[in-house]
Structures are given as C-alpha cells and as structure tokens.
Length: 450
Image (tube, rainbow, N blue to C red; front, side, top):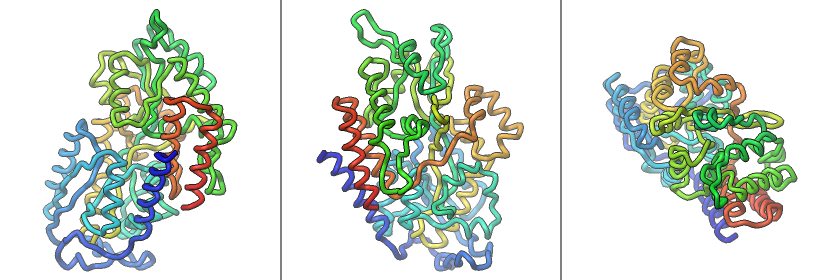
C-alpha cells in the first residue's frame, strides 16, 4: 500500500507542478519574430504572424526506439534540406513515460523545453488542462492547414475540450500477433469474442510431461493498462464513471474479468508480464522463439516482429463482447506553450511536414504505424500498402472501431494504480474482490481530488 500511495503522491505532485505554472520563458531564439505574440483566438488570421523570418535551430523530442532511427534521420534530413531557415535536431528522450517526466519538469521550470515533442495519446488531457500545450487552432486557421483529412477519432484524440492542442502523428492500436504457421498446423480457431477465450487458451497452450508450460496460448502485457483495457470496456465496464469522480473497476463485471485473467495465468495458459523495464523485450523474445503462440501488443511493432521470426506473422483483432472497439495508441505531436513565438513558428512549420501525407506513408511503410489520413486509404498508395502488408487487413476492416483514448486529468495516476494493482494481484496472489475493491478506493481518491 505504501508503495502504491507513493506513486500516486509523486504523480499528483507532477500534475500540480504542471497546472500551477504560468508565465513566459524562452528557448533563446533571436530576432523580431521572437517578440511577436500570437494573436487572440478571435482575431483575424494573418499568415505573417506564423512565418519564420530568420535562421533558427529547434529541438524535436521523441520516444522512437533504435529500430526507427533510420527513418527519424531520413525525415529530419529531408525536412532540413527542403528549406533554408529551420534546422531540426531530433533527440530521443526515452519511453513515453520518461518523456512525460522530462516535459513536465521542463514546463514547470520554464526552461529546457523542446520546440516540438511527441506525447502518448493519454497525456493530451493532462497537458491541455495544465496549459502545457499551444492552442493550434489559430495556426491552422491562419495557414489554411487541412486537418479534416485526418481520421475523425484520431483528430478528436488530439483535442482538449474541443481545442486542437496537438495533431495525430504515429497512430497504432492494440492487436493480437500470432504465429500463423502454428495456428494453421494445430487447427487453432482464433477468438472472436471474450466467450471464445477459454477454448483458445486451452487449445493454444502446450505443456510438458511435468505440467510446465512449453508454449503459452498468448501473453498479456501488464506494463501498460492500454493492452488489457478494452477487455473491460467491451464488456460495459466504465473505467471512469459519468460523474468523472469514481470508477467501476470494483464492480461485479470488472472483478469477473480480473478473476478470469488470473485464472488463465494460474493455469499456465498465459502469464502476466508485470511492469519491469524488460517486460516488453521478454515477451517479444518468447513469441520470436516459439514459446508463445500469440501476444497482445501494438501494431507499431509489426515490422520489428516480422524481421526477427522465421514464420508468418498474422494480426488478429482483439476479442470483443458487447462491442469490439479498440483504442488509439501511439503518439500525437504538440508545441509547448512556454516557448517564444519564433520557436513556435518554426515548430509549426516542422509539424506540418511531420504529419503530412507523404511522410505519414513513409512511417507506415517503414514501421507498423497506421496511415492517419483518410485520403491515403483510398489511394493507390493505400492499396499498395495493404498489398505489402496483408496482415493489416483486420485493421483496415475495423477502422471505424478505433476510438479515442479516455481523457481525464487524473488518467495517468489512475493507470499507474491499475497496472500496479493488477500486477500485485496476479503475480503475488490474493483475493480478487478484495484487491479490486482496494484498487477502486485508491482510484476514487485520485479522481475526486483532481
């Protein structure tokens, strides 16, 4: 309990620092444009207010791992070579959570901020509420930037209270990767609904003579609640109730779902990865080496899996129940609000390039991230993409079922409590109802305070 409360207190302090800071600050860009204030939202849009007029070097913070370094370098180099005034320097900060910590700290200090940064989609509400993000609506209006071509759910996920505080960048969703060769060989039927999961777990698990598991039917990530969140949402559980101050995670259906997952783990059909730093790499290795028939992960890692296995990798939509909805993952891109206007203008120029259709397809072809533009999906480029990666067909078939993430100022604290409580329950044991009740009480305290 002390460990969990310490995490909550730390997160609360971070949010307090984010929401409580105001005022100026500058990244040090010089020139006339540096002192030009953005016009009021209802003022006439003047493109000149957002022009870059002098040479400037800006930082782009990202969370893209080594496997994406080649594309990062290519995109930045191409942009730098496309014009004469802006030089972008890309800087890898670490995971989304580490980048969040660095960004919140820099915003609180009012110094050391990047000109532009990615952010995991659940942080949008927290940043918007805390004033960290620049309002992009005046920029969009002044420059005539076409945002309507983004998928509707993707664009909504990048808003806070109706304001466009970010733009969709590298978008993914949850997916079940599976070893197609083994599924075909074993005659396995992949689960379409939650009710199908018991049969799939039994059929897909291989045990040795001593009863130990030699191949898991699947592996469920525990380091991020996003991977198991839809199991609850599609069965009617409200992670945050309509009152915005309580959770339904202590309710009967939520307890039933947690109990079923624990049962599968206890039976050796799957295992819970926990929250350790190496949880993701260990899970990936178990799939690559054949110790798991399938894994639940993000579509963004499709190329990474395909490049490391000697079997055909399939992708399967996660099993649903009352609904079959999934959620947007990946990241948006935003401009910190405390930078001077010259830095913001340069960041806006790079942002338009970064989320443009051509660069979006560069990312989609070189990674597992999805095309974000509706027009791309209807073009020859989109058809060619699907020909190269036919495993993405379930995603294309279900695009309308990919929804924005839950947005709430207390979301990151809720998520931390949820994933830590699930790890403790499944990996250390205990009564499911009691554990979920305690977890819900902690979450209610957080939701009631923000």
